[in-house]
Image (cartoon, rainbow over all chains, first blue to last red; front, side, top):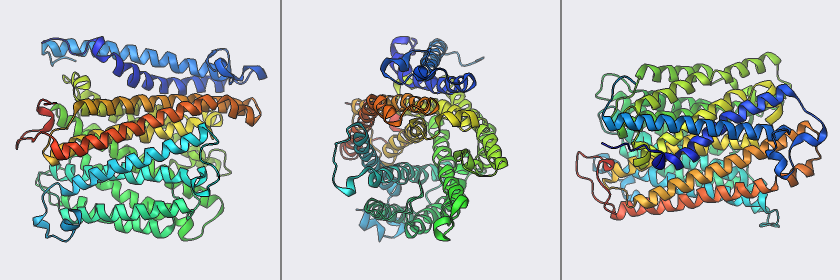
Length: 96
Length: 469
């Protein structure tokens, strides 16, 4: 049997569902870090336009953590899916 | 047809009738609920949209959206799954199809009445328990009690030795929800005020989520994933851990919603610790389901119902990570009262819970109608509208919430925060409207399934047959 869980077949599901899952975890991590670090000068709140995506600002750092965690979770899940696909293609249902 | 069955003898009513009426009612209310959500989101994105009419003011419409989704879509989808899963897991038939049909009939009437009154401004004024007390009594004694009697009696008349974990949740959660409605509405029933009122309001709000919406959705996955994949549940014992840890830890942390209120400090600390302990049932549930997928992961991309289910299970991970930690004092100080909380609530209801229910409604309606889904293309279109719309909504609201929280910490003038987050309000509306559009497609697809879906032979499952369209 052939691998049904190639990156081409899982890409969009992982990009959307799995990336979002990682982003949720990143939001908690980022918010916790910023609570520990505390606020900086007034200009660094990170609310205006692209400042929200500047990791040196308060809210930009959390947004970046969301994207980093999202990417990490999507890669981990993608690798796991590929491995599962190989095992399922071999009909190997043992030892994992 | 419903009116004919309501007055027929129980034995003359075809098995699965209650499931079918519950199923279509739930999808209808999902369309209504998300349509109202899209309308309300448009008011936040475009402030000049429909002004001057009191009935269409945000303050009138918001709670109608919330309760249409909770008591219409989600709870009716639960009722639907209980009507077919409970007997199937007990190797018996539903105790009373007639009672099931009366339940769905009274439910639709009561909910319509309650929402119209709410829309007109008859409200208790308490978030989530907005309905006035006569409607609360209808919910308890006209809806939950008959639903419970049917489920409990079906379990009691089962032909299997044990009780599968799904039925543990079903039986217990109906009972717990009745208690939640009775006790949680006591501020209105007994005119309680002050901190007692605040605490009980959020005791209700928390427990509707924690003892009904999320655990019953999880219980559904314990049925659908083994049924779809053909694999037995990885561990029934871990399922028990999930059940008992929910009952022990998640029935009491209501005050973590009120961390800034002058409640006793010990109570807030206790609630916060209990809130973190949600990670125990959460890990138990997610691990149990993902391990049940062993050898069948290809179904995640090939089978529509599995795709919905596993997406819901994946979304349970950030849901519980956020839920476990956002209520600790430090993070709560940052995110409380911002769009983050709105995003989190949608992660629970529209994300984790709704994806699991949609899978079960797809599966159950095909089984009970004995018809294959009319169009896989429309089913997939529904999935993608749903997931992309949800992600756009959730990401935009989370980022907007973080900006609001930072604005609070940095003491940014309120109006500046409103201006800064405006693009995210438009994204929120676009995402919500995508979900609504997907649901309209779903209703059409299921209607056509009932009329023209390929007939499924006896003894076969719909998902085992190839699509003809």
